Image 1: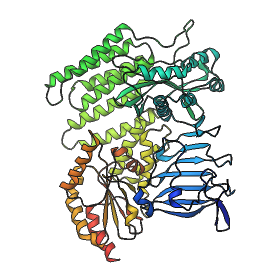
Image 2 (image 1 turned 180 degrees about the horizontal axis):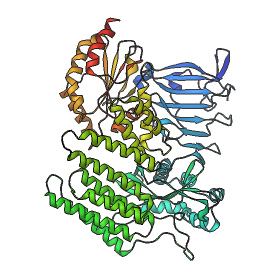
Image 3 (image 1 turned 120 degrees about the vertical axis):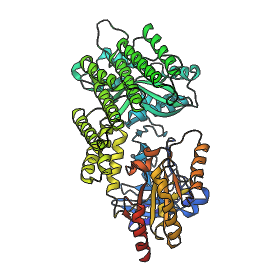
Image 4 (image 1 turned 120 degrees about the horizontal axis):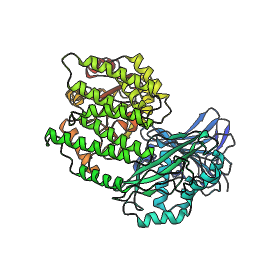
Length: 638
């Protein structure tokens, strides 16, 4: 099939694949190109916006191709020839101006054979080996994304995709897993198709309409080579879980093993049916005992009876603010007792660790809501006991919650003038925690707390140092991305800035639309934020006074939805109407974990960023007081 070529400078480039057979400078045709994988969240202009889009020639180093720019000035697509053979070999797709996915042709047949999710889109990297656009193997796959792909494969009945996720004999041989252990591991992937069909047809909590919501697991464990199970160190999640909707319901992913940059499953995901206790299982984390043929042990009658009693206790939980203090204390005390009993009855260290962590979580939460006066003493005793008897992995988890509980008690009972010292002592304890337990799952959160406290106190050098430490952390914790965002925000002054998203009606909003017209104030806010409410009358007055001269405000709402989407939208609309917020709004639904907030490490509201008419940041931390002085000066220069 003939290919169409276009001259760019002195270079020739093919701007449509043989399969497409269309000129890439035909905007409508260009926008018909779509990702070869379906699980991609990328920006698609509405039909009435296409005329406002444009296609331009672009050269970046040796790369040459076309960029599709949306109606708000953000990049929607890039189609590149990266090896100077006059043929498109990369198709890139964007969301809010950030690349989230890429199709790649590596074998020069004009068909993508590799598929990469990027930035906010994730980190998956799949390979198609037979030109059918199905991923046959993975080059990179996180544990969380592996669980997501597995749930999708299960709901679709896609055995081939599920097979690509399962541990293989070759994988185990590469890891040096002993033959006896490998045989047990592979048992979980036998009869894959029949097992998947059985799950869909028999489960009462999981069906073809179930959707992956989140990955739920503790830190992976390292099994040393000298443990006798493999010739190399192994990284393993013993019993990962996933939350799905509708429900919500739990699905047991089971044991996961890292092979290079790919996390593999060892079993078909199994829904946790109502009223049934799932015991942490897996093969690799179990001790090597002579004569043992089944590494998964059933829950004892004592454990099942106690779990049922705990569920009944939780169903009768006294209401905070309604129940008497002694009733709340008795409930929290009894609950802690039962979880400790379960920990003592646990048949493995992982199960014991989970019960101990649940106990620590419950006590710490009760202390911080002032419903368990004896809770801090119980946490301190729990920490002492676990230090003595183990498991050692639970110690930092309990220590961190004891620290938080103590801080809460100290602040609530502080004498006048003593709070600064309490705050300082807490920061010191957090620093000591990060030094003593650098690999603990709570360490990134501790570092984030220190960094944001330093920034809030305007100690920018110290804040930057902590953000940098956290950004180098390799745990993959959410706080790591936030720290990188905070560093980006602290260095914004004088740099180009653009933010885009959708409003309540789903229409695009972008600061790029106001470039060249006048200064723009970007305000991160939420309906629950009292300081923002206090600023609103003055922001409204400034907007009314200077809008005709080119000044605009773009809000970024970080409310977290509660209830149906329609009710959430009405709540925001009612707030904007009440406070007469007559400026564009970008609506996010993940609070401080939403992409724009993470991208700039936003941790307090309101956060205001003032942008010039050229699209460059004038102030990364503006205020109403500053605006009253700066806006007239900026507008008088026009």
